[in-house]
Each structure stands twice: as structure tokens, then as C-alpha cells.
Length: 336
Image 1 (cartoon, one colour):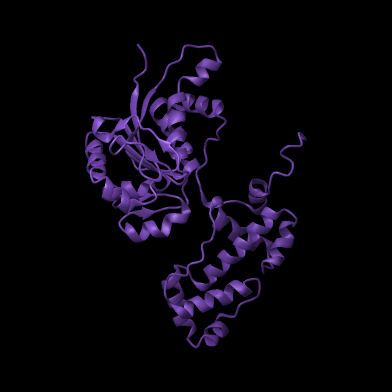
Image 2 (cartoon, helix red, strand yellow; image 1 turned 180 degrees about the vertical axis):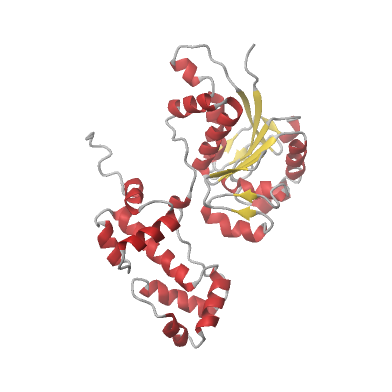
């Protein structure tokens, strides 16, 4: 008797990133196929995958390519798993597809698993299914998401999150990580390993922290905090006296710390650490400096303390970060 073939519906909406449609689709389609084909064994597919749009019409992707779906959502009576591809303009999507949220909720109530990739979590959050639960998404959209969905617990450290029958992946490539994880969940570890090997994909990536960048918040509307930010950014490699900094801006240190935290979500010290680590990341990516040199260049005196802060904010040791992001100078040389 053959393996149970599960039905997967990849939901594409306006301005989806094409990778978030086709990446998961290829992984699920190849499960039980490519490994067996290469080993000259009978192919045993595990999934039946379709792409659906709200009305069955082509999906205009972020790269301006039109993707013809297999069907509309109304043609999908039942499915085992829905994967929501990235959705950049959530208000437009809701306006042009008022049936999307009820359809997702209906499928979930019938027992379907629902996953989102990158900003697809905006549409998943609109269903209310994530209220009181944890979710992740691309680090660049986290603040926007938090403001719109305050009942969802955002954890941008995670590459993907499993909440039972609800899943979120951080970014486009994290959708591949989540797809491998779901292959393992539905079909077992060995099948997932076979998928990873045949498609040359890493398994076990759990954190997106090393890929993040420090986004300087300027939209908070507090001119004093903005002025302090600008001064700190220009002087972040120096020793900062916060009492003098507050006096320079004609407020007390206590008021400075309160207003700064309220406006940016960070204390002045936390902001300084982010600035210094961000500078260190760029120097490590440059590749011309040792870690000891970088510690001094960004304003730290203790290399052990620097490493502790760096790991806290990036999830990697400085040398490991440099090895991952330090460039491709030797990639084509053929030297071991």
C-alpha cells in the first residue's frame, strides 16, 4: 500500500515574492521523487501541491512576473496544509480578496495546517488565529507587524515557529527551512534529509538573528530623542557620559532614559550597543581587520565583553560571523 499523499495549497496574493511560491512547492513536490530517481528507485510522492489565488487569475509577483495558479481558493474544498506566500500590501489584498480570511479560517476549522512565509504572516494574523500565540517574520517588517497585531507575540530571533497546526517562517529562504521541517513532521526525518541532500539545502537553521540589521528608528516624533540618536550615531565609538548627554539636551538623565526607551524601544545603553555591534559587523564583513582590532575600533576595551555583547545581538561569535558573511574572494579559486 502506498504512502498517504497529502494535499498542499500554496496561496499566492498580489505582489508575492515568487520564491515563496516556488521554493516550498519544489521541496514538497520533490519529496519521495528526486532522491528515488537518482537512486534508480520507484518514485513515491508524498504531496500533491497546487498554487491557488483568490479568484484563479494570475498572481502578479514582486518581480512583475505573472504566475498562473492551478485554481481559485473556491475550487479547494479541503486541504491538509495551506502555505501563505509573502503578502506585501495587506490592505489591498484584503480589499480585493474579502473571502481570503474566512476561507483560511474555514480550512483551519476543518483540520488543515496553516503556514506563512515572510510577510504572509500579516494575512495569517488577520484571521485572529495567532492571537496570544508566537509568530516570526522577516526582521525588517517586525515593528510594522507589532503595531498592527499587538495580540501576537513576535519573536524575530526564530527562523521559523511551530504552534501546533500554525507555522511562520521568517523570510523567503526561511520558507525553505520551514518546508523541510514540515516534510520531516509529515514524512519522517529520513525523507527530510533526502530532500535536503538532493536540493543542496542546510537543515537545522533555527535563528535569523545573524541576518538582521539595526534599523534606526526616526518616526517616533520626539525631536529630543532624534537629536540624541544623531549625536550617539556620530560618537558611538567614544566613551559616552549619559549625564552630560542629558544636560546637553536640557533634560534630566532619568527623563532622557524614559523618553528614549518610549521612542525607540531601547535604553540609550542598548542603543549604543546596537550601534557598536552594527559597526563591528560591517568591519567583519570587510575582512581586513582582526577581531582584536575591531574591538578597539568600535569603542570597546575588553574583548571578552565585546564577544558577549556580539553573541547576544547576533547569535554568533565574531569569527563565525566573519566566516559566514566575509565575502566570496576564494569561492572560485578551487583551492581547498
